[in-house]
Image 1 (cartoon, rainbow, N blue to C red):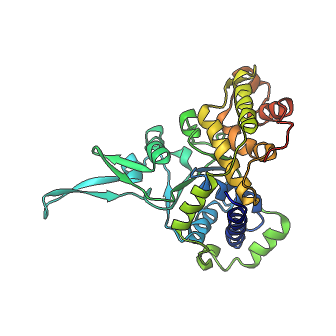
Image 2: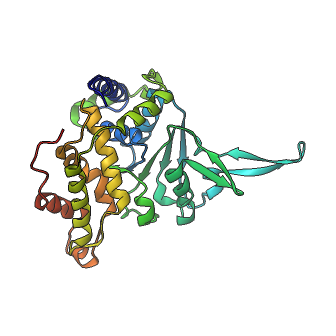
Image 3: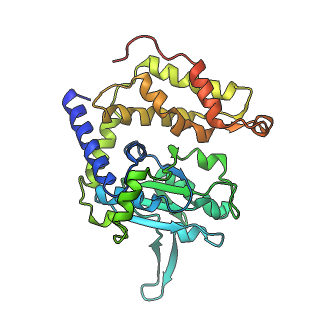
Length: 320
């Protein structure tokens, strides 16, 4: 990545963030994480209470990149075909035709994903990993860009199914919108007559340009010392006495990919250890399963990761 390309990437990224912020007030960092997930060609998991603006975020991102948007409300009776689509026999043409499901969109909001059965949840696995759906042995591409923004209710709530580790691992980033600060809340209330703030957003780039930004971000230089740092962090989570399951290889790759996008968004053509440290929590925490005994004692995955970050020294030499 040349200095000129780094500058263009950072300016474009800031413009995208500013546009989404017009609809999602007071959540600049979360918006940056969401766009980082998109440009790293990954997916976003939001664990939040109802009414915090999750749908607005998905619609605002879709409008900003001139893409399509769909929303799937996950319920206990939802079937896998309700997500992916179904093949129907057309008596007129005497051929089977595939009818696309709501997963065929640039930005897919999978709302309350942990209220559906595990069988329906698993319908998203292939499309999240490979950006295609296979029905009756025929593959159908969902296009590019493709991003799933899934929301889940806190697992303590009634009627929820815990997402299996294999599916959690497919999400590049997990974060929370949370409630807005006081000033943002007042501004939202002042505009309460406008039900959908994202409907007035103007696109800043095309979906084709999003693909170009993703390719450009992949060329960001990552020094061997930084890669070693990521590997040591992942290995430390697996070796820790308080974890039953640590960060997988996919998790390490996710941290590198997202760090490259974050570095480019800061106008740099190389990753520094601070990028890794900043993104470690949203990228790695949901991939760590705390040991039952430690969990019973009140230990959380976030606490385990914070301790590992403190105990694992970053590269001492200057990177870049």
